[in-house]
Length: 300
Image (cartoon, rainbow, N blue to C red):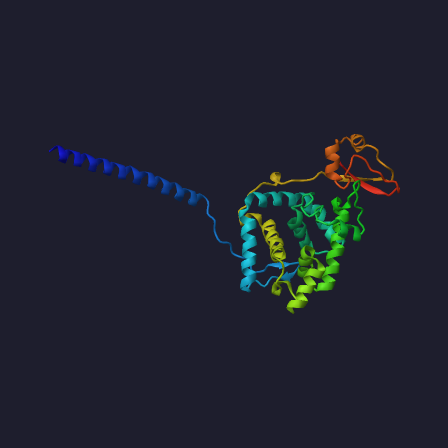
């Protein structure tokens, strides 16, 4: 009798344990199911009319389709970065767009600047600086003043002019805006030599370095997402976007001994002044040659 009771007790304990384990498992499954209901990571439908500066993307080629899909997925589901880029685009595209038009560059190249730097005036690990990420040698070759005191790679107007000159020369040499954009990443010689060796004449048929293989598709993905943010799940109000104050330009052809003091004369602190004039790299302007500089002052 005692043995039977112990056996029944043991069976009861096992059954109760199984019951609670099943209950816990069901709760975990329910939790996972609830999460999936609220947040779905789904495949994206690629647009049929993708183009860069009016040049069609041959999305029907499997390799092209896969590379485009990769960059669109990355730039859609890296949500924090995507939203930051949307906010910054609202801040700087109104400055870039008229400059691109003025210098004869297709409007789509504002997305190249976005891909290069995220529209942040930071120096890359290899020394490329400004929104267009110029190296010192390239900047100087195209006439930018670059030294410890003044670095015009950080001047959005002057660096955009240089970018336009570089890209237009690349297009003339290589035959398309798409190849010109690729050459911005890999260099004119690097792209031209590979085209010649491989006996092809367009970006989508060429085997290029890994970074350049992704480069055009990153620009295209940013164009698609920034142009259609709500289509890709980005929700925001106009008040959420970043803006810049309107500015006026003052001309200076003398040295500035102390920029912090100079800024105070216009109701600005040093940090505010440098935000609008990042090309001034120190707390003074040497200007021994009496060069004429345009300095931006916010209109308040």
